[in-house]
Amino acid sequence: MKFIHGLAALGSLATVSAQSCNADNCLRAMRSPERIAEARAFCGTYTTATASIPAFATQACTGNVASRVSSACSCIATTSAPATSVPTPTASGCSPDGTYPAIPLPSGAFDLEGYAKENPIGPVSGGAGGPTTTISAGSTAASSALIAAVTGANPLTIIVEGEFALPARLRVNGANKSIIGGKNGTIARNGMTLINATNIIVQNLRFTGVLDNDCMTIQNTTRVWIDHNDLSSNPNIIKNGPDLYDGLMDVIRASDWITVSWNYFHDHYKASLVGNNDQFRAIDFGYLHLTYHHNYFRNLGTRGNAGRFGHQHLYNNYYKDFRYQAIHSRSDNQVLVEGNVFTGDTREALSTYGLVIPEDSPNTSPLGDFEIDGYANLGAENDFGGSGVNITQVGNFTTAPYSYKLTPLADVPALVVRYSGLGKL
Image 1: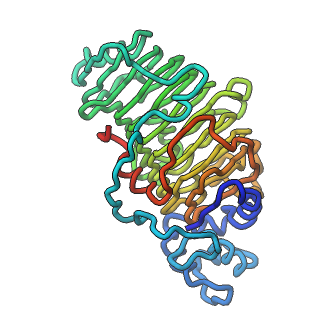
Image 2 (image 1 turned 90 degrees about the vertical axis):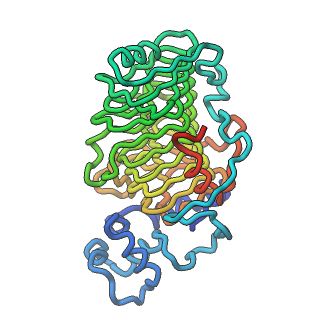
Image 3 (image 1 turned 60 degrees about the horizontal axis):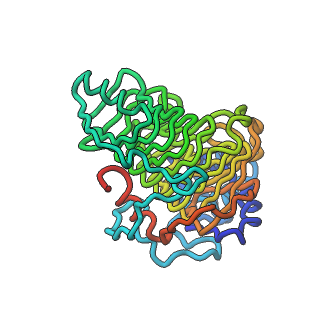
């Protein structure tokens, strides 16, 4: 395991990661899904004196093969002892691909934290103080009732039961609503858009099967809590590619003061984009304050999250098999990253490089730099595992402007897997 210790190590991190862990053709070939197991086994015993190098490595690592293979192996987690003197935890609490032990839920763990709680307007309360209505799928009348319920400004808690495959996107364009999944509460086919809304809670809902659009879009909306939901599409993310589906949860057009907590994002290519166009600086800059904490990201391609122009605080999230790139800060975006764990086939845990292609690094890509870089700061220590880290610019987002409870790093995988997603409230 590779640990980066807070801000004190950040200057050296930016230099080392840019030089040795850029995802060039050699490293990408060795980290590819079909080769990663073989590469880890090979790298576990590799030295520069090793004569027999796998064919796939010699084909990709042209030039000074031994040097390039050695550099790539230093960025790939193996079963051998760590190559650096950076401390390794004595007990991780789980195996990256094994079972997760039972772990008690800390007191207050599910309480609202982050930007949705502490902001200039006030904490999110959703439909608190208003009536509760239960809407069960199964008829046109039920669909119409759900569409009507999520509009207007009167406080209302809406319990959604069954699967709603609406003929168009569910547009939440009112205020003061709690939309909570009951038995098998599912939004399928066309997804949900929060637009021109405020003070919204979305909890315990499944979002799935939304083709050519986001499962959830948050647009020009403020004060939102997205909590304990399940968002997915299809496990064949490499075969399907990045464009069959769009994002699982995208946040755009000056949306602000949002907390995303205890959700299960999985089996999809593009997870969560914040700021969807590098030409929208005049619209987005100064907004897009989001907190992501205790989310489980599994079997994804990119964007966990990817941000432009805003501030995202990411803590205690668990990333497993994030195939290309997990956290990406670009176009003057700022991220504060702390207490997160990255395991499995996760090629790049964090990058601030601006190029927008699935395999976003290295800085020296012949394709050029299509966007300006973002910024990153590290707070409490993260476990980056064998994943690359490419911080090209250190930012000024060094401390979150609110109080929050950090889970001990060794407990993050077991706690997040056990208590994220549906049926945990």
